[in-house]
Image (cartoon, rainbow, N blue to C red):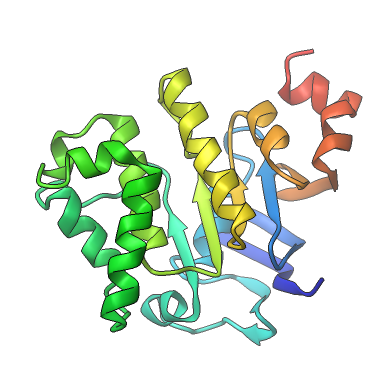
Length: 237
């Protein structure tokens, strides 16, 4: 199984503060991998650097074997890398349908776009019901559905998800995670950053634990669920 994403020695700085301290990680084709850690551990900074929103202070990111340094964000999207950011980032004054259309901006395969739109509406029936409604009037959970659906409209090969369960009711969280697992099962590679460590480890195949800007250890998700360090620090046990 080849590594679709390879990260070697990645560093991210904000002024004099090193938020990400030379981390290594791999995500293989077809995997659902999670990156867990406390607030301020560097998880979001890592995803932003992978998505081209932050310029790394050091290290290398390879996507499908190709270096990503200085590749503009719109080109990363065309290559198949999509980020669903923390806070969702939907366009509030546009309708649900218009937001989803924007997700396919880099594509011109009209018939396939229509098929993907049908697929997204099938995953998130509530979006279909509200397709003519402005995104800013949706609930937090509906906006999270829309953000994921918009990313899927680009037909990503690698989906980066930043805190998709944040602020959502438990039933909505289960729906979102169920869709994430479905997307991964259908062949989209997923890197999931999630504050709810138990939820993330139950969904993922492998996990990296991040502390103070560094990867402290990694293992299968099942092994992390049983690890006393993880249980004490992140599962409240």
